[in-house]
Image 1: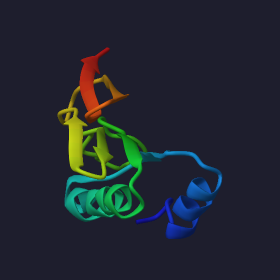
Image 2: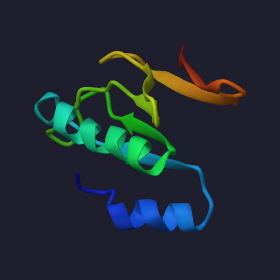
Image 3: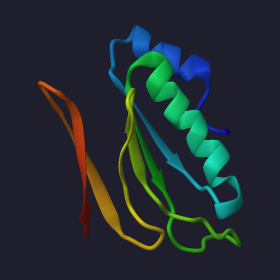
Length: 103
């Protein structure tokens, strides 16, 4: 996936940051493959990964939206294709929880 590399994730972990944030432009055709990479980083490195994707056409591209947050256990929350939304995650004793807030 362009934009995020394993080296970036490792650097983030070295700096003791427990999350990675990706601002991306992913179309419907690439969504499954690209988000599988982000989900994999969350699981492999035991971190929280948040992704913000465009949800409207821009520069000739038609992105799919679906902003999301993953933890090491999988998908925590996901916006739909057209939602203007903020996804907030909170670490609790039992693990991460997340919620989508439409804005």
